[in-house]
Amino acid sequence: MKRYNQILRDIEALARLLNKYQIKSDNLYLLEQMASNYKLCNECSLKDLTFTFSCAAQKPYPDVVKKIAVVIDLNYSYGELNTLQDVFNTYQLEICIKGYERDKETESKYFCWHLDREINLDGKFIHPRYHFHAGGYLMKDILDAGGADFVISSPRLAHPPMDVILLIHFIIQNFINKRDEADMYKITSDEEYVGILARAQNRVLDPYFATFSKDSSHQDYRKNNLFPLYS
Image (cartoon, rainbow, N blue to C red; front, side, top):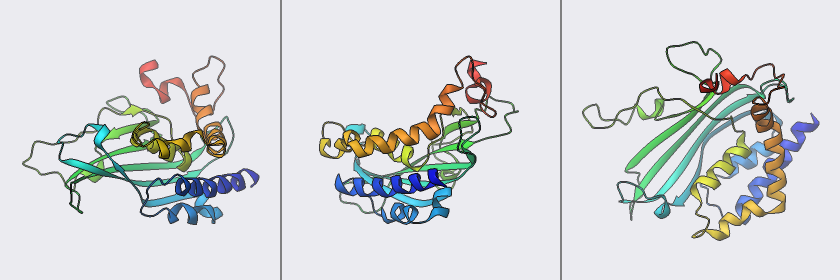
C-alpha cells in the first residue's frame, strides 16, 4: 500500500508539473482523477489522454501537416511490485497520432502504434513479451481498401513496458523540440520531475534491463522472451 501511495503522489505532482511547464493537453484532468483514486492507480484505464504539439521539427510527410495530437489509450493492472516478477498482470497501450493541416480543426492524417504484452510467445514469427507494433487494430477502420497504405502484424519491436509516468516522459522526449520548445522541455531537468521519473524507472525498467545480466533470477523475464534475437 505504501508504494501505491507514492505512485499516487507522483502522478498528482506530474500533472501539476505538466501545467507549470505549459505542456498542452486537452484533458489533463484525467491524470488528476487518477491521482485521487487508488483503484485507478492500481488498474490504470486512461482513454483519449491527448497532447498537442507543433510538428515542424518532425519533418512530416506529406508536409501539409502543421500540428499533431498524440492520443493515448493506456490500460494496465499491477502485479507484484518487486524485482523478480513482471510488474504488470495486464498491459495494453495505444498511441494514435493525428495530423492537422494549417487552419483545419479536423485531422487529415492518422497513424498509430501499440505496445502489447504477450504471454504466449510460440508462433510463426518472433514475438517479444513486450513489443511495439506500428499500425495496429485502430488503423483498420481508416485505411482505404483501394489505397496505397496497408498494415501487417510484423515486425514486432521489443520495448519495455511503460506506466503512465514513463509514457508521458516518452511523449515529452519524442514530441517536444529541445531547442524550439526549450521552455517546455525544461520539465525534464526539474528536480521534482527527475525524482518522479527515477522511481518509475526503478519500479518498471530496472527489472526489465537487469534480465540481461548473467546472474538474473527473474521469474518472468528471460533474454529469449524479452528480446528473441538475443537467443
